[in-house]
Amino acid sequence: MSEGETIIIKGGRVVDPGQDLDMTADVVLADGVVKGIYGRRRTRESGTVIDATGLVVSPGFIDLHCHLREPGFEYKETIASGTLAAARGGFTAVCAMPNTNPVMDSRAVVDFVLERALSEGFVRVMAIGAVTRGSLGKQLSEMGELAQAGVVGFSDDGHPVSDDNMMRQALSYSTSLGLPIINHCEALDLSDGGDMNEGWVSNRLGLKGIPNSAEEAMVARDILLAETTGGRLHIAHASTAGTVEMVRRAKERGLSVTCEATPHHLTLGHEAVLGDRGDGGQFSPLTLAAYETNAKVAPPLRSQEDVDALVRGLADGTVDFIATDHAPHATIEKVSTFSEAANGISVLETALGSLMALVHEGKLPLPVLIERLTAAPANFLGVGLGSLKTGGPADVTIFDPDAEWVVDSTEFVSKGKNTPLDGATLKGRVVATIVGGAVRYDARESGSAG
Ligand SMILES: [Zn+2]
Image 1 (tube, rainbow, N blue to C red):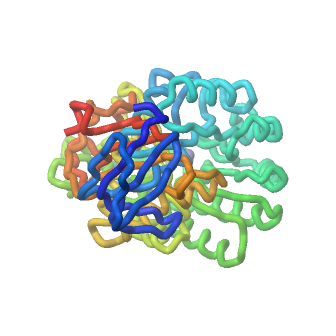
Image 2 (image 1 turned 135 degrees about the vertical axis):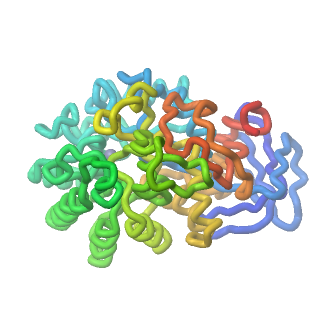
Image 3 (image 1 turned 180 degrees about the vertical axis):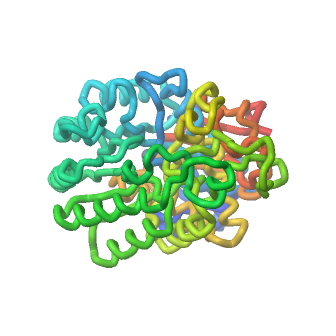
């Protein structure tokens, strides 16, 4: 279907927190924009009809944090495969992290990524520029040049900005450029090459633990520096209760501090490293499935207390939005000892199914979940996305909140098959994804979607 065509999404539950809407209605898309939402009096428009009875119709999801790996690591993912995975996961816009090779620290690399996304991508792509040259932490990147090239923020993600003064300068510049500094908060002296969360699971498995303080020490520093500079700080992938508490206090004091949480940190604990998910989500104490490298991620999966704090923070708005930290790796990078395995999880295609558990368990109302995937990241980015307002871009995600399916990573369109959810049953599945009025994914057309 081309973007010029009229699409009528009929009879779904339209949930658009950006305009405080939750009702059964028809949504009409034409010429790449939303033409209107029609409630009790159904539309008489003609065009391609998508029957959304029993389904949720939402603005397209926006992911502030994903790793598309191109240029340089095309064996892990490409812009084409990563954005196809995004479409399958219901995401209509993603932000690409700059830890490519070369690093996205110059206009040339930003141009390359954005041009390739236009020619080969399935969803909208925005670029995040590096804070420091080569993300090496030694010298600030040409932040002004990157801003002119259109980056939506700066990050050395994968690495923290460890140097205090470098972070201070970056936050100072961020003020004048009006863009956030997105820090991967990890005090490397404290994480000290650790493998997983420091706790009973790391003790049981004899793996080196990473304490919560490794994250929290840098979050505390960054909040102080945000206060000193008036800069705009965003904390990537918050993982601990302490981080949530510090961000809550920073917001109360009126600082420009925001944070995100990932689907895995919101739904999985460190027990995932014990492996064995075949029994519907309960992890067995210790089996041959232990040392599950697909559950190795930075920051590590934490304790239930941390998971609960993140969910509460997401519900009350302390955690501003959800970002996937989609981090695809080649299989060979996970078939190794736990210590040697790469950090990261392939998330895009399981994100909604994971997160819907929070709704089904009564921990998060559906409109709040959708807000944290749509309007909240759109507001953060300051882009005109994340809502179905008339005249706005026709970016729509249609999903079945109750469809149960079993995760099979061999069916992922992402090159990264690295998920600890293989074999798990999730409840909630994307049915169709529309970007700018063009259908980019339709489960009812693709054979593997059943
Ligand atoms: Zn990171």
